[in-house]
Length: 345
Image 1: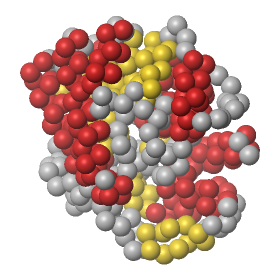
Image 2: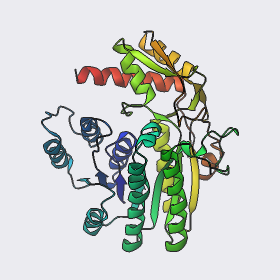
Image 3: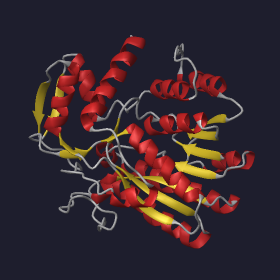
Image 4: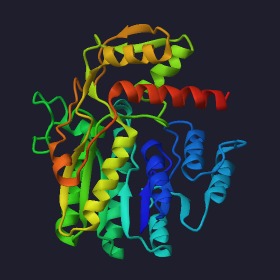
């Protein structure tokens, strides 16, 4: 199979690319290496996911990206430095490759930044996604997976969150763009017979996690003896989902779509294990053998109080079965972080 992955140099995307390549598939990876965080992290992700050495001599962004494109290129893997807002640029890629399946992970991420720059989120997460569906229509591509988010549930009082819950009250622009993507997806499914699954990811963590996310950020701050920004009283809670379980859910969704027609589904991918902010920090402290220095701060706008996935549908429909509990997941993350820290020191 020939898979087109958007955002394949990011956290989730690089793990997915790695699994698909190891399974003998061909991957076309589109990533724009945006400035949301250090582009060098994505280059390391790319080298790791394509089986190349991570000893890379960085110079400047443009040259480094061009070098990793040529370094990672193979018969089964092509990386394009491309923005999904640029439909003409995307169209050239679609013309040059036979694409069987699209897994769309690329997005502007982050709840808090979306409040500061809402129009950027609309441009990438809505119009960029719609560009892909327009090209699916034009080139006759009928299999599509879309990365949605647990943020669409907002501050729902009903837990656990079920796919049948009303999600008409998002509390951040990021959440609203993800909800819009689900709605637009149904339009393209209905009008153009594009089979698709929208996967609502619940707080993904593990090796290669983005440095702006809490577990990664807290780990670095603890080791550096810096203060941790601790928002609220520690009672906010998340359904943390280990990266291997997310990848398993994506791959099982792919198999489900490949063997069926006339499919439109929305599916939660979570761990169904709720962990408070205080509990998360405690597990990190245990794994690191070091105490945190907390800086107490008020809750931030746009943050949800609790996420908790009802994964009954995922289990029933695609055979999803998460296997990594939070304690083991944190240990694995810390092992990776410490090894990565040494390798890049």
